[in-house]
Length: 88
Image (cartoon, rainbow, N blue to C red; front, top):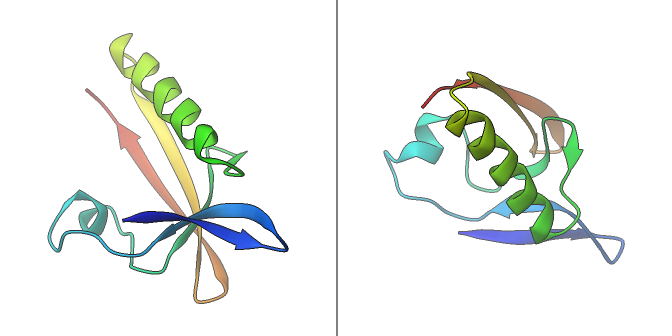
């Protein structure tokens, strides 16, 4: 489950509150309570940001391009970058 992470009255990312054990999120290295701050240097400041990024990734995959995705999360107060090569 995902929820907006709010700081100073503004959305400052997407908080991962839970996910299916053994599922893709866990295999990708996410942990519960991670806050997704940015994807490929696009800051997540509202839910539409995540949708835009998803569409961008999907467009590249549909064009047959290998696509690198870098996700910056805040975990226990520290920044961590997860990197993936995505192929169709």
